[in-house]
Length: 67
Image (cartoon, rainbow, N blue to C red):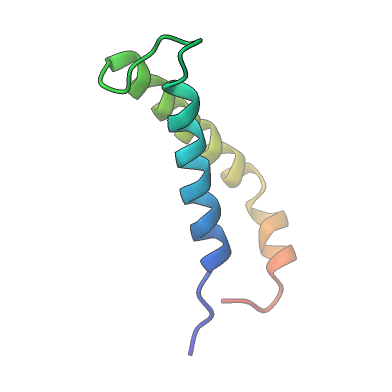
């Protein structure tokens, strides 16, 4: 039986909820139904993906024998 990365799943859900909450704050005046909000969320996703790609060897080392 393979170990499921539930911690990463919950972290991703929390990060998405946090970004959505920040984008809908009254101080930013950005609604989620605008193209600007979608662009910002896409940019965050790309930055996170690049960060994970850059540190993939280190992440694999830290994971050890986890599949």
